[in-house]
Amino acid sequence: MIKAVKVDQELDLKGEVCPYTFVKTKLALEMMEPGQVLQVIVDHLPAVENVPRSVTNEGHEVLNVGQVNDTDWEIVIRKAG
Image: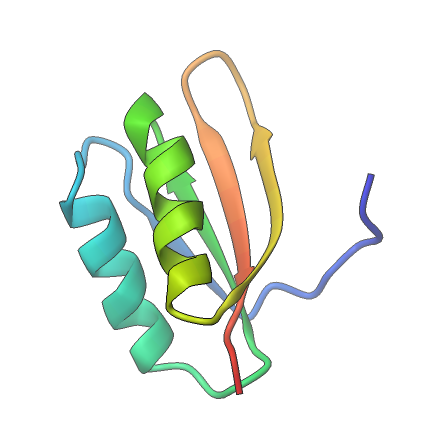
């Protein structure tokens, strides 16, 4: 369990599929300041693996990946900088 992190922006990508989940996450991160935290909500199971892997490859830090309910997952990312 991680300590509570202040989320600066939330991105609801329910209904979106790969690769759009990563593309929209990347665009959101580009608009944020280094060190800010983005919470992404997805309901497309492949995105639970693909988005964290892709943002890590971009140099960002994945703080948490967890199931929120039966259908939704959260991915919490700190922008590199």
